[in-house]
Structures are given as C-alpha cells and as structure tokens.
Amino acid sequence: MCDKYDLMSNTATTPLLVVFQLERGAPVLHICPLAAIPRGEGLRIDTIEPPIAVFHTDDGDVFAIDDTCTHQDASLADGWLEGCEVECPLHASKFDLRTGKVDAPPAKRPVRVHQVTVTDNEIYVELSTLPAPEVH
Image (cartoon, rainbow, N blue to C red; front, top):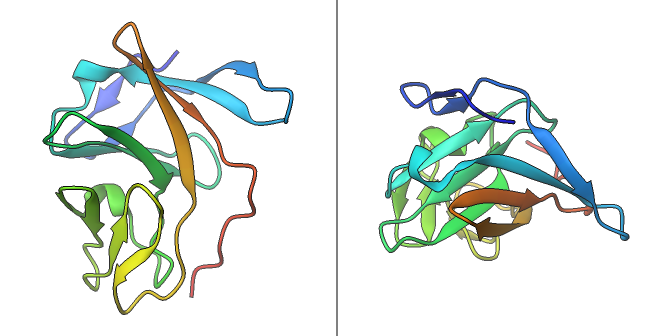
C-alpha cells in the first residue's frame, strides 16, 4: 500500500499495491487516501514507469495523467493546477486533465489519461493500456 507521502516533493515514496488486474489487462493501483492530496495539489507516483500524476482539484475531482510533459522532461505534478488544467512548470504548456489534450503550447502531443475511482475515500487508478507518448 502507498502509506508514505512526501508532499513537500509531491512524490509517493512507498511502492504501490496492484489491487487487481482487469480482464482487459489494465492494472488497478491503490494510490493513497483522498485526504493525502490536498485540494488544488498533485502527487507524483514514480514507483511505476512511466510515472503518473494524480491531481485533486479545488472542486474535489480527482484525475490521473502521465506525469512527464510531452515537450520536455518536466514533472506535471510540480506544475500549477487551475480548474481541470495543469500548467507545466518548465515552459507553461497546459494539459486538460480530463482528456490529456494540450491546451497551450509549446507541447504538441497529449499525455495519457488514467481512470480514477475513489472508493471509501481511497484513490484507485486504472492505468491506461495505450502506449505512452514520446517526450521531445
């Protein structure tokens, strides 16, 4: 289980538990309690490859996307969250957390979106089975 969180660095520090694997082959991970990610913040999960970022919006929604900006190697969990968008801290590309699409350049390629479920105030993420986009 993910029972240690370093919110100063926005990184999960304990290996995640694969709770189960769906028939279609997608693993479902237990991320952390919902309360471990304050509203308006993100958490980088780097115990899997590629890393993902889980965001808890000010409205209380939870989203998960690939953590690495597709423009250059920057952690999106370290970016600025506004509504359903995250802005890359390196060159200000913006990504829609619902679709992964780029909302502002210089990034041109979307990030993968992962399915999030919150059950009993615990966050679970079903990892996408699509190939990860290349970082340029």
